[in-house]
Image (cartoon, rainbow over all chains, first blue to last red; front, side, top):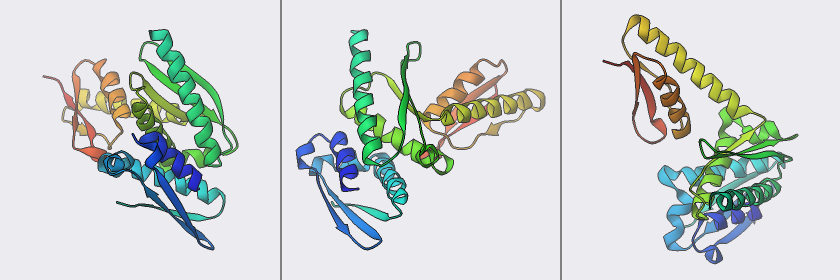
Length: 76
Length: 158
């Protein structure tokens, strides 16, 4: 799931090299922390949070298939 | 120039979707990737065993895929064309339904006057409704509201 978030973030931002994703894996659910360059925050959040919501929706659909739960945390 | 654009967007979209589907573990294939010249719309049709999962409740997952694709394309400098992602014709069926509903309500307004508010829709769906209703004499449309709550209002044209 880490790779999925990393891929989506990298295509959305101006500074893909500054995209940093860490995954804290739990037994059933994991937390995925996404860090991007300060000026790219708006790009991964989007107008009215639509982009962040879209990434969470895809993450949730992808992890449900693996019978797991994953939460996306965008670190500001 | 146009031809170069087409090849560029085609190749980009195919690579992008292939990787996105693989990383999200969705067992889906790109059935068709085509450009409608008149509306300058690229449509990617996906299908496969995970189609229900990729559509999601009320098409939420499909909307999310499309939103990321559109945002990423804009970021890659490919914003000249509209971009549509569809799974197993879901969007087409939903579009047909939206148009039929709007036309039915427009006919009601022609008979009884008054106005009618449709449910909130995406920009693409609102554009569709404006187009369909513009072909009906005596009824006009306007968009009302903000953000995700923006909807189309049908009213008699004076």
